[in-house]
Image (tube, rainbow, N blue to C red; front, side, top):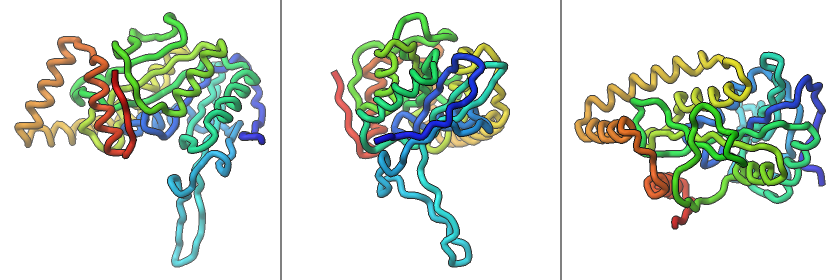
Length: 282
């Protein structure tokens, strides 16, 4: 049973593959937004079979009704797109997180990674954290070996976390275990923010740019980030309790106090409770 269709792209170099799924580690839609920015107008070279991977009752297709006529159905997708950046091949793997067949899905992705000669796997994610919107977006890393993370990103947090695994993490673990270098960059999104958080998407795109060794324009997200920052600043100024809380978070950042496993897990647990999911801690 084939899970994907591949139209093998013409590759000039051994490609990087960037992966980001719409899942619980996509707080503020940051990793999905970064993936869209990175993919640009790249052509789709692989698509996974949604009928085999998705529960359409939890990820329902969108129906467009025009003047009482059912005009168009848009189905959830999971695709790989190809883009050439400064002479380097970049593959962007994005879309909805699968509901079913994770073992087979991991097998299929491992096959694709080997067939396409991927030289490094880069996961992008975003997690809720006790960080303020008034400071630069912190990024934590994971890696299959110590020398892979770039840009002074630290692995972490310290300690042991036990949370429900995302499909993206399953793939990163599988690919790294098979011998392909694998890293993950996870932006920390202020837990008090609901809705898109473009500032985190920008930082994730920059993390990929460091691996490509080039600049990637984030202009399309920069104005959104500025507008959101202004709205958040205005809302914070109107409420003394909120202002005091943000100031405490600023102090933690300014003192370079990295979040401990206990600190981070409390925010993740709160986030997952709101989504009806569970977590454990040690």
